[in-house]
Length: 601
Image 1 (cartoon, rainbow, N blue to C red):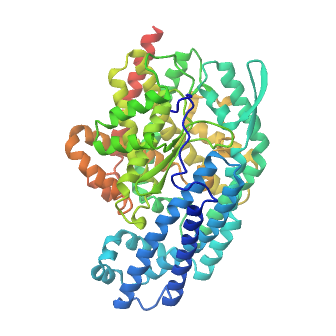
Image 2: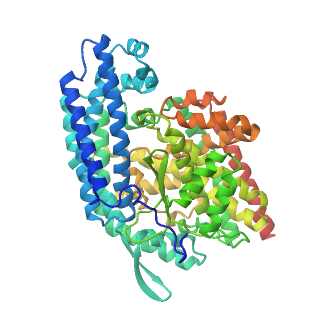
Image 3: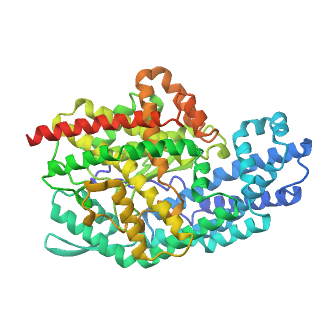
């Protein structure tokens, strides 16, 4: 925190001092030249699906040269693309950054097409022979084995080229519309007797306000603003989902879900085991919500009561207190972890202040060489402390991934949430150890509110998206239909724990995950429950765990989820594992209920 007490903004100047700077221009030129050079090699060597898959010295040289060039190019792209996307995430009105990112997307479309050609080529080679004769291929064996499968899900080269070209004016443009338009939504709200117009993300912070009337006005203002903005957002969602359905079908996937499971390195058995366990836990999380309503003196919660504060504790969670607490407790895990956190605070990796033009939510983005940038909207609550620890967990994951080539750093979302969940759990458990009853209640509420989001809400999101895909396969959906599908999914998850007249029918209109990807929901559930299972292993044998866990994090782009889990004696295809992880949360719910009963006695 700087001297005038404002929440910090991240330092992007150390990456590039500006889009007009010589260093940025040179980096962009290098990416353009690298993509052009790579394309020339592909054309010269005819890198495409081949009927002659034999491995000879020329083929080995071609593979190794392309792989090395791709790794170098992807490292450069990561830094520059992250710089631009981070700039826009905190200032969506930056037209210069918008324009440059649009230009970069055209270059990346070429790189993406080259990746498709590379996949088709690898899939048609004698892979076993390549792995035997090339050390570089052996290092990239997981990527090559997946290329064999991916090659079976490619359209013809002409169709893939056309899809990549059309994406620039199709799906990517609709995503850009959503990101820009939604980040500029303004909300009318009455505060302190005056009518004010505030950014949507700023109004969302009133969900934490102690005055229920203000929470309700914020909720109603959000509903009115999203209703007004809904038509173009519905058009964007219909377009994005339509494109995803068409391409999944053309590429031979049984469904977009099957494609998403493969992308996330998990199989149907793993997904079904987890999904079965999470649905089984819905009644337990509803008990938590009902206990929350009891403490607030309400017959039932409304949507805007889910994050209402439950009183004040003795522990301060101002920004500087949060950072010190994280440093103290990351240090109990390893010096490597605490040094990463200290660097993130000292070198201003974090942008914490909510403001106009800044998007909602939180994320961590790698800029290369083990360094990251974290965006969040900090509030003086334990929930924000947990969010900060969560995003720093992603940064710690990036530190461990840095030792691998760029092609082996591409981690599926399921495993990408592992380190973040683990780091969040370190901070949560530490906070509970020394807290008095009131602070325990507040901390447990933060833990369970987050768990409810990734167990009930994420599953509800999945149910919504699954139904959306089924209906969108037939035709476009109206704003009203999208709202009805979303409300039905919320009711299926929350049941009678949330007043059905006060759900959030426009959730689809502001959740970015629906637009930027598909089935971006269940990986969060996986990450939380898998992380809890790993944390239990850590508690049993901390010294042995640390070395193995850091190695596991470095390998999340090098193996499927199930084999990695087996390194820790975990069978993720068995619902028992997921039930046991949920038991940890059930114990927290019981503890929360007991504290509520004690306070209401």
